[in-house]
Amino acid sequence: MTVRRPILALLLALALSAAALPAAASAKLKPCPSSGSGCTLARVAAETGIFVGTAISNQATATEKADITANFNAVTSENAFKWSEMSKTAGATDFTTTDRLVAWARAKKLRLRAHTLFWHRIQNAPWLKAELAASPNPSARLRQLIAERTAKVVGRYRGKVAIWDVINEPLALFGAGYDTEDSSVTPKNIFYTTLGESYIADAFGLAHKADPKAKLFLNELLWDSRIGDPKSDALLALVARLKKARVPIDGVGIQAHAMLGTSSPWFPSSTPSLKRYIDALGKLGVKVEITELDVRLPLLADQPNPLAAQAAVYRRVASACAQARACSGLTVWGQRDSYSWLDSYSLTSATAPNSPLLLDAGGKRKLAYQAVAAGLLERRR
Ligand code: XIL
Image 1 (cartoon, rainbow, N blue to C red):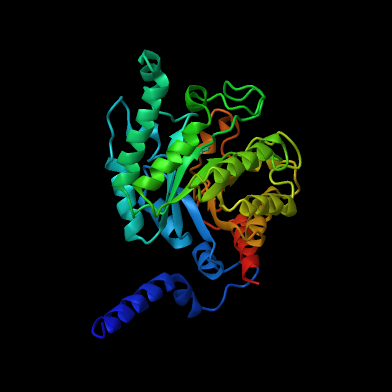
Image 2 (cartoon, rainbow, N blue to C red):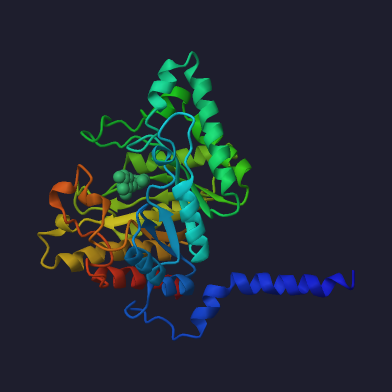
């Protein structure tokens, strides 16, 4: 006992100092000015305890990687973990890209959010529909496929992925004319129509079993002025049902793409409305992260200073995150304006370049960058 105690104390001290690393490193530097200018978002993250992340593409160049390590302390896989990317044909799983990404993020000490296990829209497994159609028992087959993918993929990275987006966009879009969905909040996706809502609880339970330490999130698209509308209410109700059923869900991601501008003023109409919404989720016992923020500049073309208006939208979101205790992270969907998914996405490509990000095409910090820093620093006070 007496011999072991000093060893235990040493191990404890080492563990504590490792956990406190980012804060300790920044303590030697002058604190970030509250305007946010002159501070990287990685330092803001260390000062506030709010993770600041960015999406990393499968083809990230050396420049993109340098932008990431210079500015952020967290990454989300933009595409690598999606079922369509990992499995081109039934039964096959390719880990080449995800292995590389996991190793890189670990080497750079970046928190990794794996996005996503199950997403019906755009990047579902290309063979899934035919597989279920051919099966004598589609619901049993789908349950089996969900269990297999979860065990295989989450299990492989057990202890190496900090956060899993277990389910992405479970709710219907509630936007007429988008994809093939109508304007109802009832989900029409292949998981839901085959299994009902049970697929969500099942996937969370299986993911928890495969990696008990990973934080498990449900990620949902809320855009424009959707806070306070039926879709945001449906999300609260869904999370309440999951918590009541003791599903191991740790958090909710609010994607926050400000991309369609279907209503004005658009997402989020105000800092208090988003803060209230995050607080409401927090009361249900989950953490919240803003997971895919980008703000399309062409939507602000009629403003006297579009870049300042864009910064103001970013600021509203960052302030809400800082003010709402449950908010533990903010991630933007890319680094430089020269590469954004919005420039090739069917609904938004016509207005390319959409310039929705924090660094301009030359890598210079935009007003929006300082705005995010200043907004998040409100947590410090
Ligand atoms: C996007 C990627 O950025 C693109 O590269 C891909 O072609 C389509 O998907 N909501 C999500 C993300 O949850 O996975 C999407 O990412 C953007 C919308």
